[in-house]
Image (tube, one colour):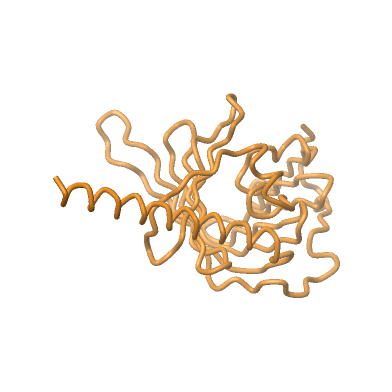
Length: 211
């Protein structure tokens, strides 16, 4: 009985340490990292369907942000796509389709992964939209799980992995059971970005859809 009690206390202590480390890393990231640039690889795993195994799609590209509310994902492989937030508008550009979708940024972001890593300016703002929960360390990273508070969210949860105060990983599980896992290379924190990094102008001839 004494051995079981000691083991329980140790497990609880480890969980508490993981929570402290993860939450402290997130708080430090939000407070101190105002701009950043990194490359990423992304694996999107669809849930099994009709007895068929899970399908996995791989993509890669670059990501940069300037807090609050400006960011850019550039997908380079296998298809070229841009997701750009300029502070007012969220632009999605599919090069192959030559199609641009524009949405008001304030309405489009909400409880999204982008809000977690690029828009929030403090923990109070984050905790207004997300419930933060402890996740055990893995892959040599400290993790925090963020569960959207909005009942109509399209996400089940977002898990953010940190190496120190550096963003290293992002796991996103949506309401359909699809898992998107991003792994980032070394983040260039508080680096100088080009003034027009987040400017976007629809290319001539592209179909423009405003929502």
